[in-house]
Image 1: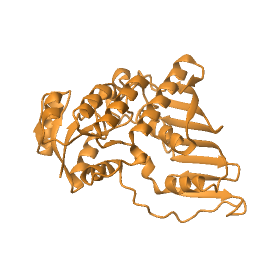
Image 2 (image 1 turned 90 degrees about the vertical axis):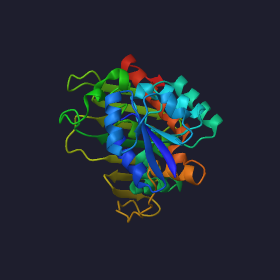
Image 3 (image 1 turned 135 degrees about the vertical axis):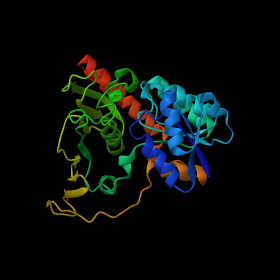
Image 4 (image 1 turned 60 degrees about the vertical axis):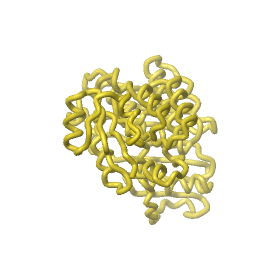
Length: 326
């Protein structure tokens, strides 16, 4: 049984992660720490576990095997570094850190410690996206030249996001830093090493952070990726388009269509997408600890560092008005 301490209830997904841990069967939430003591104590009571007032006491406790870090993003670097050095297995909400130097420090500490590390990249578990990834990897689309992913919701205009999600200091940004992380890590997954980013971020609701954002990324292989996100769109579908020299594919919500020269004779078809049952990041993490197996590359520390690099460049471009190197 893996004993996990929840590190903060700040993030909107914190309670969902705690439920996943307790539902896993091989893990349990045994403690809560929170920078907001009142919130932490209330959550610990709800979970039926201990509240630990000092983070260092969490890390010193030999009965705690692992930490799930869902704190304000600007606290990630310090919390992650301490946990890795203490030998606690780490699950973390994205993004890893808010700057590249901290990301490299965390990566070094994670690799040195030998702990099991997972970052929450849940869209990599999609059957539809994995089907398209296989098409691309098998060369069915030829040389990939372009990809675009749009991931939006109405959190700002329907006012269901918590107020602290608009705190630039805690979050490090707005829509791109939160929801836009998914298109960013997926474009990295599909297209490889990013080189430069050009961003356009706007503010629709007069909050302190951007709520409407697009970044255009140039990749080492010559492909162009477009990451579209926002908190100000209603009735928007999840859309992923990818094109290459031999074909193209599209994911709309969970439906796949594709067209190529070899299999479909240039006609668009809707294939049956197999159920892959890829474990969620939380369940993959627990399994890696319980069975001491290798961490999944889908959610590993190197992929986490790449996301921070892409985000850093995206925000540098948005404020500088020019392309920024990754």
